[in-house]
Image 1 (cartoon, rainbow, N blue to C red):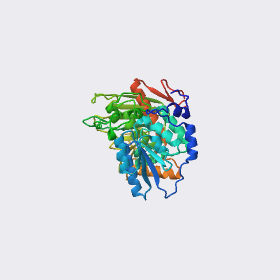
Image 2 (image 1 turned 90 degrees about the vertical axis):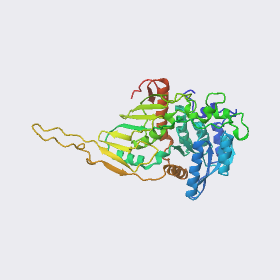
Image 3 (image 1 turned 120 degrees about the horizontal axis):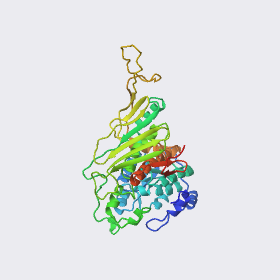
Image 4 (image 1 turned 180 degrees about the vertical axis):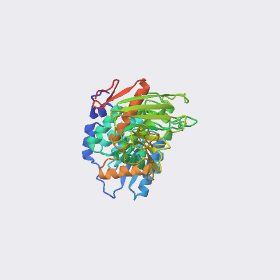
Amino acid sequence: MPDELDRRDFLKQTGALGAGVALASHAFAKANNKMNPSRVLGANDRINIGLIGCGGRGSDDARSFTRYGTENNNACQIVAVCDVYEKRKREQAEKYSAKGFSDYREVLALPDVDAVIVATPDHWHARIALDAMDHGKDVYLEKPMCHTIKEAKQLVDTVRETNRVLQVGSQTTSADQWWKAKKAIADGMIGKMIMSQGSYHRNSIEGEWNWPIDPGAGPDGKGDNYIDWKTWLGPAPSRPWDADRFFRFRKYWDYSGGIATDLFFHVVAPLNICWDKPQYPSKVMASGGKYVFTNDREVPDTYHLLAEYPEGHSLVLSSSMANSQHIPGLIRGHEGTIIMVEHGMFESSTPDITVRPELVRPPEEPGSNVRPKRGPFPDYKFGAEEIKIPVEQYDMMQAHIGNFLKCMRTREKPHLDVETAAHAQILISLSVDSYREGRVKYWDEKAWKAVDKPVKA
């Protein structure tokens, strides 16, 4: 798609669904909004949710939203579900006594739906979210928020234009430690930031993303076994039915960025919260390979990312699907280090975070036999001892949902708003391009595109 296309052209030109039905144009959606404006939510109004994508993550999200509604005075409920797999659609519709649809646009057309959960494979995320916002719906958009760099720009622009609330579903960003770390860094406890690091390691005998395949399910299946494969492919390249691609989509570049988009989003998004402001990288490179799981997967099982930022700091990320040992998640400064997750598991809570001051030895006085003691930098006001900052403990998924629903009522920015998420998305998308192309990628923020040479300041 040419860089100069705006969002309206994007919706028009990419509108052909696999089933052969075009998406509504932006102008039509605008008119539809006037006929069916979004509901103004009162403090006690129950929020009606439509679930789009009823696979493993979508069903988990529906369960979590339902739990939140039950435990918080019926704050929300699932009223509609949608999936191209008949079995999944039926099961979720029956579970929540909800309306079931095979075409997500039918969910968007329901006037009583206030927001949608988008939990489809990654290559559908942006298109459904864009259409939902144009129909006056707020969006809980599973991570990664999109599949391409161009889609990230479309999402940022559309949130600004429509004033919809969009929360990206990396629930760890609602944990307390990132916000405590942000304050500590803003207070000057580590001095000039120079490097952040993190990891996301897992290990399984089968190899990551080799989820079970339902026998008999597919485009030729009858009843519950029917899958609308053509619609599922949507904007991805046309291919004959492949059960592995459908049930294990994260193994393939057409629908996913593998480790980068599935796992590193949970690391990069909270780091952007900790930093003084969300930041775009200036230079990104990635490496790795299929070292253990060398079957028909396309994405690597081991992956590393290195990025530099124009503000003068770098980022190092590490991951393997064949080893489960993490490295601590921390941010290094010239005068101290803040350790947010000593155990390295970014999706897990921690009882406290640690600020460890840098201790330096002053110059020795000529002729003195006494070595001066190590201490903090002369102007460091927080002392020489390690500082523990307590972290509030709570269910981060329930907090993330609560934050989204609250923002639907107040119209405030949620914890993982579209712009913060875009900074994470650009980094991981650039890293995927770097890995696949075998070269360093640079980011031109003004032009909003990847380039192959450093951008002059």
